Amino acid sequence: MILSFHPCLVADHQIILGPRRLGSRDIDLMHRAEAILLPQTCPEPLYRACKASGARLFPNYTWRFAYPGKVGQTRFFRSHDLPHPKTRIWPSAEALRVDFQETAAFPHVLPFLVKTDTDHEGEGIRIVRNAKDLEAALAFLERDGKDGGRGFLTQEIVATGGNVLRSVNVGRKVWTYWKRSSRPGELLTTVSRGAWIDFDWRPRLQEKARQTAQHLFQEFGLNLAAVDLAFALPETDTEPRILEINYAFGRRGLGGSPAFYRFLFEAACAWLEENGMDPGAITLV
Image 1 (cartoon, helix red, strand yellow):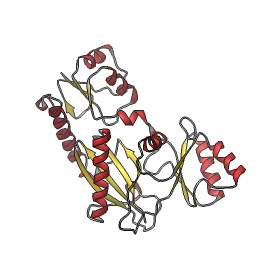
Image 2 (cartoon, helix red, strand yellow):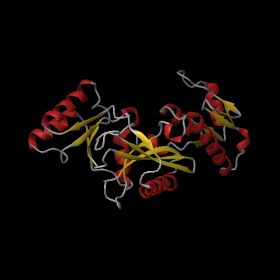
Image 3 (cartoon, helix red, strand yellow):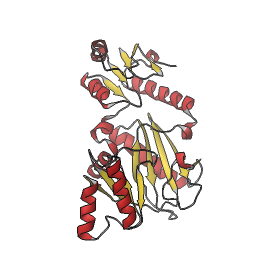
Image 4 (cartoon, one colour):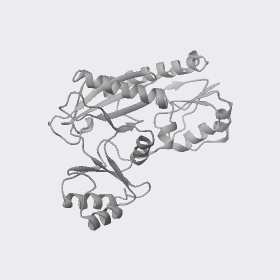
């Protein structure tokens, strides 16, 4: 039996959980299921419950919950020797403030970034160009309570010229495209802040990004993830450094939500077949 928690993938049984908690019937279905299809915005309690059922899970969110947030991803990159910008993890804003006061040294060459653990699309990023910027960033972290929990990051800036390359894994398929700032030299590049999508620029670097994405699939089974990579430009033989892995990501570069859900459905069908189950048991709505 195949169980789906995904609102667009209908299986033998489908559960739209919404804001409610798992009930006894839900748990019974999970333990009867041979495979479970998870929603892209899967909360950790649902993942843990599904994992405990012993069913096979699609997508593979092992690393998403083993190394949560940007702090967790930094530890993931370090422990698996994955290339990424020089990054430091801080337990609190006060810890960085004290370090700076005692050493009179910034944690990275100026300018550098301060990143919150969980914000997306540049919302939790502050650029530090001087001591005044650093104190403003630390005050921001403390004011909004964003330096607690797992802490936060400081990170070197890769000279991308305002160009970030994204690779997207959906099943075994990979898409790559550039997010390019309308202002050359921009230090923060996001589509939500006006960056435009370019599918054709720098094809050699796109191929390197594709190889990185394929490695993440083959080595770690990441079968639904968008990976943002930075290349030091204008060098032509530069190697990619992973900025972030996004498990819930925008679909504009894939042709919008309808196209994305078709790709997701095809990936789920292929995954079921690879695992000896009937792909005809699920439909796309």
